[in-house]
Image (cartoon, rainbow, N blue to C red; front, side, top):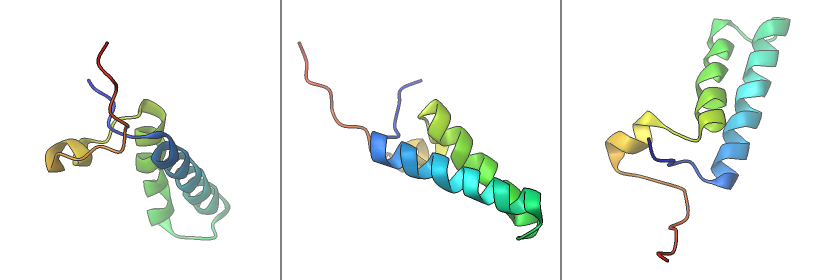
Length: 65
């Protein structure tokens, strides 16, 4: 499985995921806050299935040796 989530994208996904989960856990938002698990997991594993389906990647290209 190739990485397709870059550094900035990864940090943003993890932050948004944690905030949504915290808001859901405290009852500030409804059940939909638990959807924060999705961006959190995609940020942690650096792979987004939706990016693969759309042929996208936010990872920088590696230079061949």
